[in-house]
Image (cartoon, rainbow, N blue to C red; front, side, top):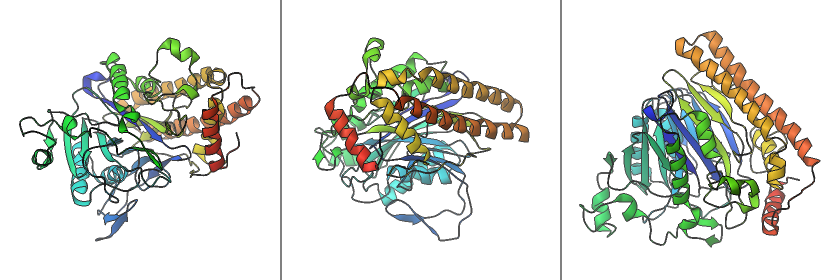
Length: 464
């Protein structure tokens, strides 16, 4: 369960393209930040994706990947040319394959190979038609397979691409667009698989070619494909994709014409409740309708494992990343592309607690906060906001300088700001952990919630 939003052109304050995404995954499914330099490859070589291998291209680009630790692909990513992609799990009437390319694999392959959003869209659809999409999509869950939708952006434009097995349909974004865990493109589109409408009629999804509507015709009536746990398939409707889609769209529209990266951060931190409800809200009361996702039990097992906001401008990009779960608790840090790229050396994390792993250091903090969310948030939130505001102000100054001319001095300054942001963030998290560990739990979470998280902590060998 994820959410992706984008604003282009006049919808943003500075006329840039801004894309944001929350990646929702199972607890202990660590989300790493990787920066991979492009390189030349031998002729006729192959690239090993998560489950299958495909032919490699002669030259790949520099890519920034935000990804579950165990797979080849990424949940969100960007390349040196500004192509930036986020994806969503979707379900359709088409069967789900046992193996193939994951939607996340398709994203990485497109980012490594293409210099524009339009070309990236074409690469994804070409690979999709040739190899199909399939295979388990979650860590240690062999039955959680799904199809994918994407928002693909660059410094000029953005596209929504939605799929049903090898079939696909695409729509160019006019100003603001959100996607979630449901199909959204109806009768208006810009590109389409040549056999999609014919296939829909032949299968009885559409009554006729004239009455074709992709989302209406391909969303399964009973939506039985979504498995919320290994042994308990549950209806797709429990993902509440339409509720989160409604929420993120409304929030983005409220800022239309003046959207900034900070506004998109606020969207991704939203719990889809009223201000009055927020005062009494706790993690154990979380619902699937919330863009900022908190796992509560086996019926709502996902949390937002990583979050990013990409500010794509003419001559540079700023990718604001948490590198941690739960954006309402986390701090966004800047990474600048195409130069200097990610300079900070982040210790990777996997499915077991590692006291040096960047994601796990933050994850221990998140879980301590969630034990008494309202009281513990108040102990550090003001300091967190001030720290993030400092990063934003420094980045605004860098953007002003870069708009005039990007010099070696500017690039060095970018690296310095980014490095300091990660260093200061992890230093503060370590301080906040020590502070929170001494705080008593004033408002206990529910028993079901505590049991669920105790089980996850035992699996991860994490003591909180």
